[in-house]
Length: 110
Picture (cartoon, one colour):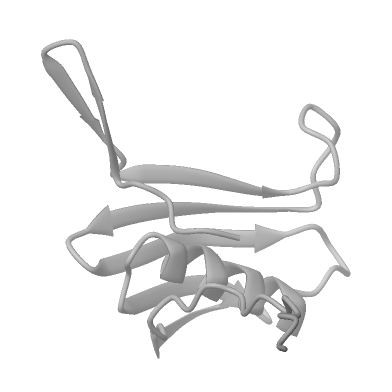
């Protein structure tokens, strides 16, 4: 896992990532079990319309995945709007600074 750029420079254009559609699915193109829209503004992220299929929960693993994704984009604060038990729920979450994985390289010493 590494950090992701927020923009791509191509010829005389810069393409900036400002919106993302997230799908919970193993293979792209297959039916998905959850969907969310993400808007990026500075170091803030806003998740809108986080919906799951009937009887499917938004799990702790899902939440961790979203936090890791945001961290890789340099986001420091995320806001979630989603339906929970037929009501709109808003949550604000601090995103930890991205820490690259520690390499377990052994070094031989004389």
